[in-house]
Amino acid sequence: MQVVTPMIHVPDVRKTIDWYVSIGFVVTGTDEECGDLNWARLSLDGSDVMFASGGQASSSERREVDLYIDAKDIARVFERVKTKAEVVEGLHDTFYGMREFIVRDVNGFWVTFGEPIDGVATDEACVRQLIEQWAEAVRARNIEGILAHHTDDFVMFDVPPPFESTGLEAYRKTWDLFYAWSDDPPVFAFDDLRVTAGDTVAFAVASMHCTVKNEKGGFEPLKFRVTIGLRKVAGQWLVTHEHHSIPAVG
Image (tube, rainbow, N blue to C red):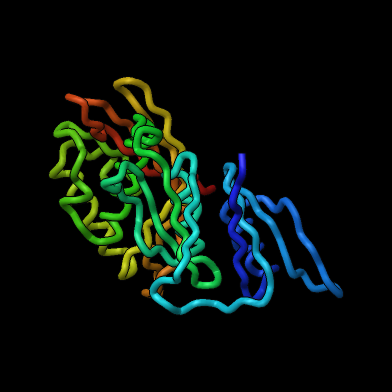
């Protein structure tokens, strides 16, 4: 089978390689001339691309040709890539049956990652997307978005008092405290998110970070842990429990 591999001319091959390796690509070939790296070939999940010297970075909205990369487990790929690139479009489903996201690479070029929806519409992917949307709602101060997909008898164990918050109204009040001590815009991001899903029950464990107000009125980073329990009700995943924690000191 004949294969077409794009070769893109860039201003700095080594810098370009470093960026693509940081999002998961593997270098499969390079060439140097007088000590300068002038060509490289990289691969990700069977998609190959070549970079050669002599190009220019782009500040245009679009180029004549973009990269389209077939991804596996696109939600996990997006989680890895979004902190290393300018996100043009977040995860979204297309009318032609693909789940995609678009970023700009280190040179400003558009790169689209895509996976057939039939390949990602698993319970694990649905739970991951629900949790990521919850975190986005926190950053947007969207209380209704935060409460969405939680059961009426939801139970939360949090870092600050109270010891237990039961029900959506009690859960809503916990966010008043969070925003009172948080920076603006709020920092609330995953460092790692792992999801396990069965037919009717799922759970996720995550390490996250935010910022909190210190005694001097400034803000300092705080790393914390989150465990989330979910139950599938009438075909819809709903959060039944959250446990936010930090390691004990002393």
